[in-house]
Structure formats: C-alpha cells, structure tokens
Image 1 (cartoon, one colour):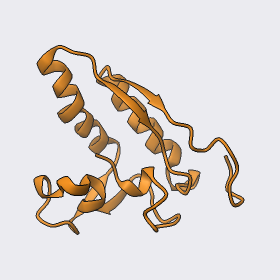
Image 2 (cartoon, helix red, strand yellow; image 1 turned 90 degrees about the horizontal axis):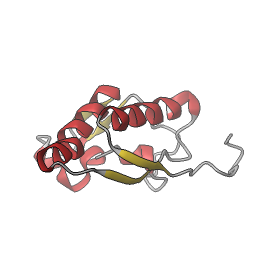
Image 3 (cartoon, one colour; image 1 turned 30 degrees about the vertical axis):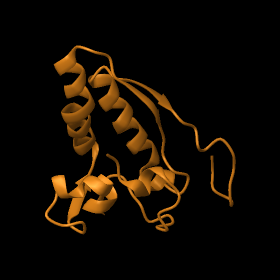
Image 4 (tube, one colour; image 1 turned 60 degrees about the vertical axis):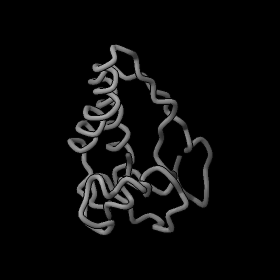
Length: 120
C-alpha cells in the first residue's frame, strides 16, 4: 500500500505529490480502499508513521505469524517527486520501516538518467 502518486508516473498529478502528504484513500489503498476508508475520496495522511504502521501491520505481521522471512522485491520513488517535495524523506521513511521490521528489500533506481531538465 503506497500513495500511487509517489511511486508511479502515470497518475497525471505531475509534480504536485509531496511527502509527507495527504492523498485520497483510493490513491493510497487502490482497490482495497473499502477496507480502510469510508469513501474512495476520504483523505489519508501519509507520513513516516503511516509507513511504519503499514509495514508493521502487513509484511511484518506475516513474517512474525509464520516465522518466515519477507522480502520486498523492489520499491522506488517516481521521478516527478522532486527533492523539495520529499523524495528523500519518503525513501528514508520506507527504508527505515523495512530495517526496523527486519524486511529485506531492493531499491529500484528510477532516477538513473536525466529527464526533462529534472535533477537526478
């Protein structure tokens, strides 16, 4: 579960996404929004605490319950999330949550090349 606007470039939101930030429930939980919110448009505040809770309540709980390792295949931050909008804070919060929950992961480097004048 992640705000789609932070991890993919096909949201049409351009450079308006921020971290921390407030997002429609449907953007945060995608098709599972009914399990978390009263409506798809309900606002959800996403910050480091939200990320820690999401990691703790899902993959970490699975790992603990079944005494198995959990691996996050790949995660990243979309190119349009500029540094001054929280790109590094988001990456740090997610990585910190993985480490705290003993979950291995791979960071997908989307920002490996310049694009439309944006910095790497």
